[in-house]
Image (tube, rainbow, N blue to C red; front, side):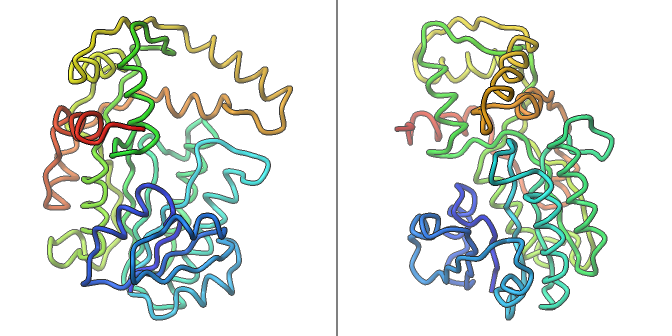
Length: 301
């Protein structure tokens, strides 16, 4: 029995579908609307406040693993970094111990460190620390931009690549996108660690990313080429976006973008993923193949 928090997200729904008949899934979501988005048959869906320790502990009973997918890159009036990251991770660490689960798998963000000046990245790092300080082994997967069929990142890239001109903040920023299917496979390695020797019985933190690091400009042009298009990328300075986000924060209680969000999206991702691949016993989907799957084979609506 696998308990999945944030199960209504793109990765959560994809994980549920990929687990197959060998697993039972208890999906935890926060609303009736989120519950309706989970359509896979045989899944037990529970509507629970992630910060409700008693309700979460009851949901974890009988579960062998917990996959914790809850996280935000922008704060809103209803959700802060502290609540979404540290608060939920504190609860997960406690209920994992109470339920006697074998392992917790947690998705973090590439670049998360306690010393980060970015409140989102620092918050994610504190959440990692809380989970790793518990008594249950944890697999922390720090990931960058995820490209999956029908998800937000793929839709955004698709529309940028189809334009004749594409305006972007700091187009030289380095991206290292990873295919959603590879993230799911990595999570499954954490669930079934003994089969792949993925550190069963111990806690591990892995920096996971796609096989190539390239500029945002180059990524957009690669996507355009795959779509049979040519686009001109016009780069705007990051301060321009940060200034706009600052203004929106001043005039709105719940702005569409924030400075912290833009800084997370602007993080330069350039790592060697081979150590993580060796640890997990898996290989990565080439970027061109991932782009074709997400943009051509399953074009965003």
